[in-house]
Image (tube, rainbow, N blue to C red; front, side):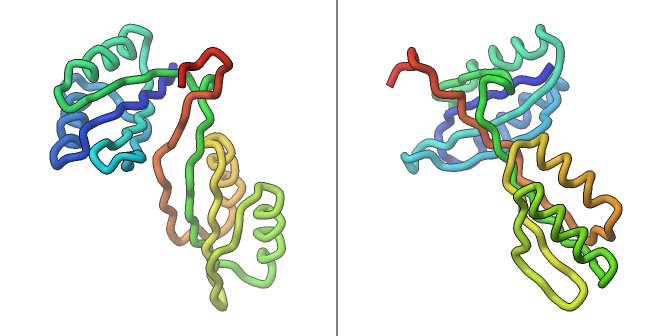
Length: 163
């Protein structure tokens, strides 16, 4: 079972290390981690995706709430979230596979953002599942390099959500 934790923290040195240390000490798994400033430069938002049984996921939330630098913790499931991940992938291409690569990009909504005589860099920004699917379609091609962000997510809008 996966859970998404949206953790508002004070934006200062060492906070990320403290949160990561909490996961390390308790042997909790981090599937994905993305951190960035919010609209306030004093506050950052950590989006942590973790997996485990129900008890483990509850413990993660409790332990996060105990941290002094943590302002607020919101948890939600993948189905309750709008999630995106960015991947850049550099591939080597030739005359035979160039058309297939371009068709895959068009089908999946990926973009070619850099091109040379025999290599191209492709970007895709989509749900983590669609990014995974795109990567699988590219496995038959000579992949030179890949870089991915962690999942970023917001809880889906609800009519009863407070403003």
